[in-house]
Amino acid sequence: MKQNRRDFIVNFSIGATGLVLAPKLAFGQADPWTTEYPKILARIKAPKFPKRDFSILKYGAKAGGTFDCRAAINKAIDAANKAGGGRVVVPAGVWLTGAIKLKSNVNLYVSKGATLKFVTDRNSYLPVVHTRWEGMELMHLSPLIYAYEQTNIAVTGEGTLDGQGKAFFWKWHGNPRYGGNPDAISQRPARAKLYEFMDRNAPVEERIFGGPDDYLRPQFIQPYKCKNVLVEGVRIIDSPMWEVHPVMCENVTVRNIHVETHGPNNDG
Image (cartoon, rainbow, N blue to C red; front, side, top):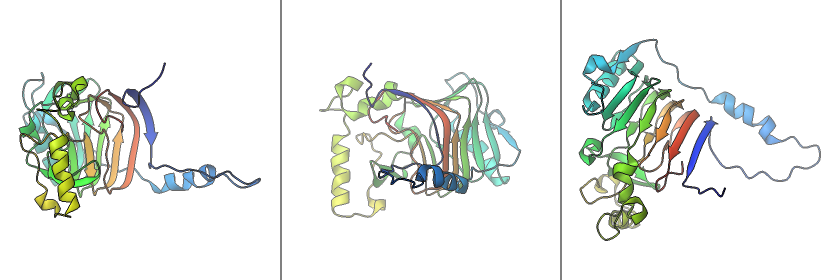
């Protein structure tokens, strides 16, 4: 069966990402994948966290998929951060939430049988944050799980992260295939505006988006200028756009995640 680049299910383990076009080896020359890859991998250390758990239930979260747990989850993250770190635990069940802001020394642990279901309301991804859209810096809606200049952070577990892209975000692309309308709901005007900002080298602080007509879809997981990052084990479905998008980070480990999403720009 012919596969489409936008239509995939992936299980993968990555320590560092990149594209290497290896030249043809001369006779007797050592293969750099054999000699150098282990050295690179040895330098990448996954973050470690104190053995302290912070259940989102303690901070007011309610299961069932109708109560907005955004405030409770972020309160649990704040508490773990202030305590010196630990694991913020999402128990089994369906938990509705908006943008989640990770902080240093916090592991967001999504338990087996748990689903974090992200709301279909753009206001839940405000205020705007410093982010990137197709490589261009701007102030825009928060990625669904976001961190900026944090150290030792993780998203782990055997649970599911549901971006509800099909129900809400995909139509922003403008393609009728995804429910969009290029004359009404489309990313094109906002993208053209962002290009204009880029052309005149406007300061990032002036490139403000996030309004009701700014149909630029947020990424799912985006650590920005962070150190020691781990994404492991979780299942990601229906992402608005890119799934795991570290920007200018150091020491990133992504392994054993499952990605199942069939929308526009759902290619990484």
